[in-house]
Length: 250
Image: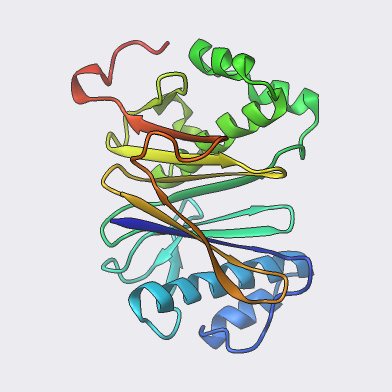
């Protein structure tokens, strides 16, 4: 099984031709009072349409609906799950295999002030804080933990209401979720960006794609998520075995 993560940096305007999506989606993007929000909305759905074409051979974006929690999904339950994330000018889309869930979060490493990042640390477990304090770059480490958490909460669909259901054990490479007990998360810190993809633990590969500034679609790399070392700044957390899952949080 594989996941597919594509991103686009909106620094040169999104191409409007051959978007492979219904007119009502294009009209909805034009209805935003904030032009930037409309462009990000359109870019996310265009990237999703391209993924559906490349991975599943579906020529046009299938109809979407929005859950009560604000999460967009395909109207057809037989189609795969996906997750959308924004950070600055970055738009990202994560597509899962059929029948599996997906959660994506992306964050700019130094977008928050030191005071804001200290606020983000409130409510973290001692294990999470110990891992952060052991890293060379405090701001990057806080951003990684925050991004990991948000990707899982987007997978579960609970948002901030699901914080009590989640514990991360980054020092041990483990996590606990009382809502979805079979999750893994891959997170990587690049020079300016941190991204985290939450997927089923059965997912073996993560394909990374990018639409570049010339509007060309290109493959970045393929991550074999079960390898022990997937990158110098990468972090992978997997669900605890059943018999250990509900022990008190560290």
